[in-house]
Length: 579
Image (cartoon, rainbow, N blue to C red; front, top):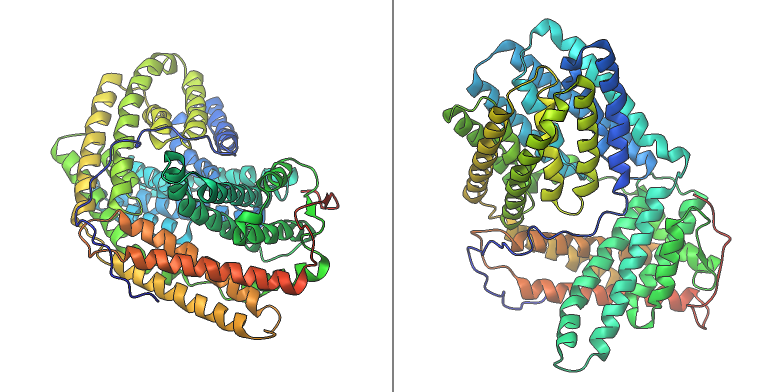
């Protein structure tokens, strides 16, 4: 490991404003959660409407909103993830309802809500369930704490949520009937596109005019593109390994990922257009392309032996992933509690809105948390104006109320991937309308309380994030550097052997790739934290450079022993498999 002197970094980093509200590209699958949540919410709500019991919609919404989760996971893994989401939602709801039935003390209710929010944050981040993370779980449990309740009503309300959760599970799994390997195909396509982008950046950095603005941009983009490509390839492998079953369709995708690894190791020799062409074919519904001369039978088996080793390796225990999240959990507990107490002190009737606002802020570091706070405030303030415009229509008839909520559900999921604030423009009026399922309320009062709770929750939440420091961020970089160095040394030892045992070099390659992805994520998270020691930035850069060189060497070694000579970028067949 290099002993380079760390580059000093400021103890308090400037919090950015530019770019926080900039719109990004829509997600490739933005329509999937948008349509899923409508399909999940509509039947229970319309049934309650027909029965004249819209006052129970809050409980069915708890189960229905589970359909928002796990859309990027392969279906076998999605089935397990959605089941745990439903169980987690029901557990949080049960705690909230029982607490609400035992006490009406607002301070106790806020305290329980903050504790639930902290647990939900820790578990969602540790399991990497993905968006929408803990926010939906916290919204349901916090709102339920302030719903009038008796112990005798709790079982029936939980049964409603469970039934809606079961329906949400079916909705989430339904696309498997049409495109059973869609998530894996998308992950592989994203990896191929990311590697193609890296190959283009490599060419620009190598052939740009010295000291030209274009060359400077290329030099800046090159390491970011490499890190993004490595992360995309690693994520695609994780998607293929998530189920533990290597079927013929997945083997076809594994071959393409081996080809992506070859291009990542030698971007100057890669053909970006061919990589992108394969990615486009994967996004369709036809057969997966198979590079004809890239991966002959013997080379494929050599290159994929590491997959079997990874499948055989024990999963990392959950408790080891919870430890590094302690500062985030403490921030969530403290911020949510203080936000709720502040709302109570101001006399606001719904302190859970301030609590949920605080819970929604906390990201990997304080800089990202600040950005999310700005987005939340802007989105909520815009959202209350949307509510003011929609409320007269929603109040016209209960059916109009249900339809408005469905439309806002769709809009929130369709827009939130472009920027969190844009999705919040739909989430805010939807949350306000949900409070009117039980009874129509005065719109002006709702708007005022929502604005106050948003500002209080954001301000107090950001203060809590600054107070609860994450001084272990630098220590985690040291641990990640040690992990990279160990993985690199193992791969280097195997490279030095004349004939390493079959599969060992490939297994070392995957371990080193995973360690490099973890190092980059850890360094990015630490770079946005306050009040910590200087970050070893130079050591991180040197470790990444040497690690990627070793990765490239393992791929070249694999090629030299397995692949025939000739132009490996030409030709393909369509003897892949559908899915």
